[in-house]
Image (cartoon, rainbow, N blue to C red):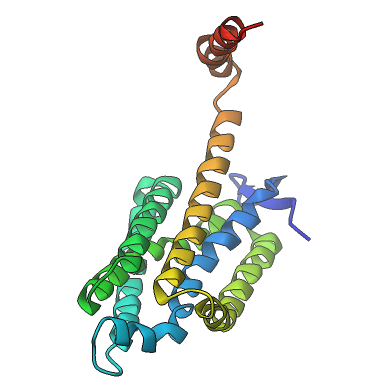
Length: 233
């Protein structure tokens, strides 16, 4: 059951105030949390194919995992202060977009060195999906509400690494190892679309009645009028 009510704010005396939490909020955080665990393990069944096609020695493909773990460790250290300084939304959107671009680089890599480099970049960007959701929960929730939603994210972080190698092995039956990275790209792009969609809705619903009227009469209404008169009868 998705949480619809949480302790979102605290009064000046430290007591919690109950306000509504949007239904999409836990879903979005769960989707973000799954990005990094999936990226860690989903390509493991394809390591022998990667080593063969990139003409490397057996076992050299494990360097891509080393690159990922190193980038993930550094990224989590860096993204935390950045999100504290510039807010949660902008760093999250920027890092998710960066992850999408790095995933494209992984899928198009022709050498093991290129793949390791793009894996580091993807990990640096993907670290935001592990740090920012937890920070968002602490920002908007407290008490039992925070514990419940945090426990669900922890469950996702625990289950996804178990399922990811099996999913990667299934995909490998129907596509090459590059297809697995394209699948990662599709997942990250979907999460990025969700972030942009819900952030835009949240912004539009909170910009105030006056500004919404301005947008309506300067953009939406003229567009509708032009469309109406330009459509042939």
